[in-house]
Length: 222
Image (cartoon, rainbow, N blue to C red; front, side, top):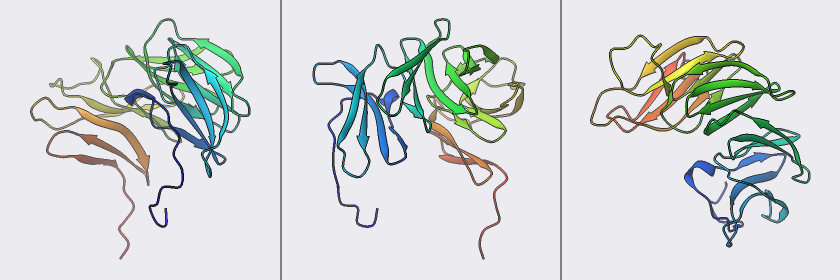
């Protein structure tokens, strides 16, 4: 970060849905394909790019999400859990055939953006805690201390427009906290997953607004 010089590279074929990688405790976890088109998850040393381990996947559809002890990947309609130490598959959670678009993990709960909405599932036993029906508008979501923020539109939102929305839901029960429709324009779309930082949600669209900050921002430094 001090010079911008390339320290190492590691060849990995990947798609937009499977990037970016996850980084925890000086290791990088990335999904992609081998030269023979075999889907894999790979662990690399962050300081050198040296390969630590590699495991084959079935049909990955999301970027890896890493915690201190495990990696979770949307793979073939399931949440597949791997050990961070050696990549061994620990468990599989069936999400009843939903197409998985994005995953967020917090306090033993997986928050999943799927083809038919947003839902929360227990990492311990695979039981569904809550679900919200809707249409995903981009891949990716953000998990805060009390809320889950996702690019999703729903018929339950009291809007007179079909514009794509960014919405916040209570982490405990999925109740809607707020929703925001991006501004008008030709074929409006959400261009990147929402990000939570400094008490606000930041969203990006392809319309004239560009980047929008939603929520309470700290005062500017004088």
